Image 1: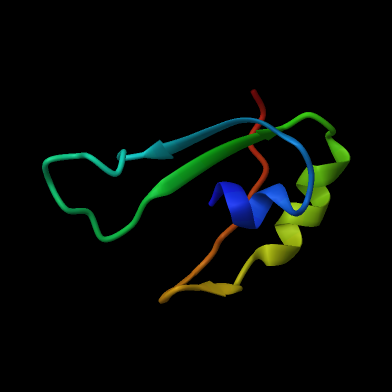
Image 2: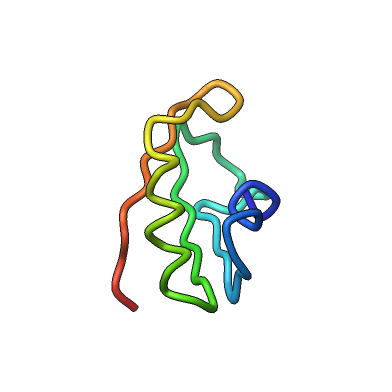
Length: 64
């Protein structure tokens, strides 16, 4: 996720829930990304419905 969204701007913070080392398996995950520049958020939203590996991404802004 860091590589994919890193092309759109400098990432200040990235968190993935549940983490990759979670003991249980989950069908979907949530990734919170905080960009250094707010303008990168608008660009990232253009990735909505893009298939990444085998799932469609849903990108929505989240106020911190």
